[in-house]
Image (cartoon, rainbow over all chains, first blue to last red; front, side, top):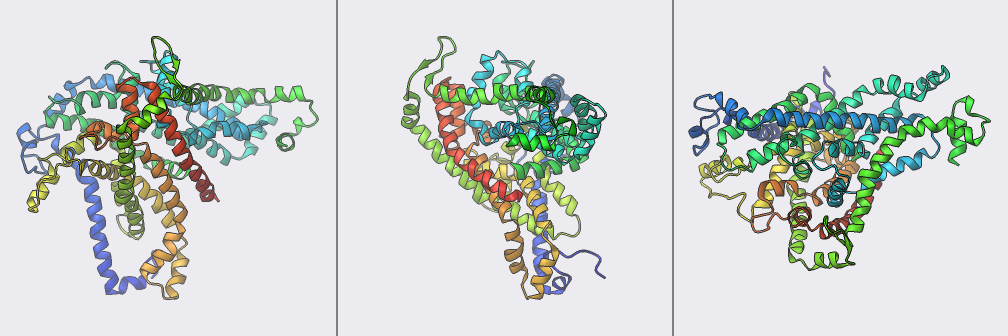
Length: 290
Length: 306
């Protein structure tokens, strides 16, 4: 009869009426939580299909009276979304490349090459984790200015290779790969470069996927830093463009605003639903390692 | 010490080599470290050191920087708005604990017991995390609007209107509720994994000894995740003490400086008043306070790994 493993509650508990009442109450609490999580998201999409009059009625109705799809066309034309999209993708792709090349290489060397002083070197990287970013946000900005990187994508690409957290992520993955694999290839005369590009990186594909999702969500989310470093629409990523032209703007109609917000929410939501496994794994690594 | 350990662990070919050839052997290995080392120095260590230098300087992009001694720090301690911003930051951190910290623990325990639809509940709880920040801001401005859905519900219940954004009593709490809505799912899933990994026979044994449901949670579940709770507690303090983005995006520190946090004040000094020296000094002071928290986090992290 014992089909499911017990948790805190046992099958005996389930038979008691006081427990049943408790379960009903907690189920309602969980249902309320789920609804309050989903309602604001649903409302974003539903409002994007309402007419201007409809979206401004008080009290607001959940469903649109008429479904107006042309809001999306109007939203698409309201600002140069393809340009912002391109900039976001530039930042994402460059950041990912630099992270894998610089941090992946360093993590591989620290994990697999038995270098003298590797603990000391690792400590040099790791120590930066304990310096809170907002304490050096100002000199970081001045530093980029001094290096002549203002309004350049390199201001994002190069610092992407200076993330101790991402290096830790890669290194702990390499640590779990068996050393014998690399030693065997070395005995066969393979270089370290071969070991990195042909053995380590292909094996690290799962963790690189997790890393890619982290980097994507950072590139897609970050609106403030690009608004300082980049000047003008030609360089703004999606989040900054939306912030400047939709969130800050006064003139935009509410339903058009929601259409634009829906459009920028769809890509990350699809990525989440498709790559759940990688995201939730990364979440655990991220949460505990800090 | 390190050397001997390495050469014994290395491949057999390494034994008996002299020192120069050893460096040759490891040269390619160090080349792998070179790009990351350069980038870390250029984009982390240089700014960190520059921040300390700037805190004693008047930063001027045109005329060049001049040494001003402790003037920047004097400005920080004399600006009454910075005092207000410290109070606001502590208030914000406190609200985040009172409103947000316990919610994921509670739901992790409840959801661990859900037999059906657990996958769906997990996804629903995590979904707000996926929403881009700018969408969060745009959406919640409407939700908190005087003619938005919450005020509609309050009116339906016969309660008075609440000005979530413009009432100084509400503005900070409104931001915390918004952030809790967005972030609670990730913490909940981390706790959930820990709750689910508690061995089930512990509950069985406790139940045989007559422990009720609450006793099982209190004496088995919660102690098992105690270290994790402590770690996330410190992480939350470190994160919230630096908070400024939603305060900036939603209210720009207003109404009447009610949401002006210390982090936002740094941003204002630097990027509105162009006073990078005072802003750097504020960063250094913050570093001293947070460095203390970081040390605690490091020690707890080690305990968690064991």
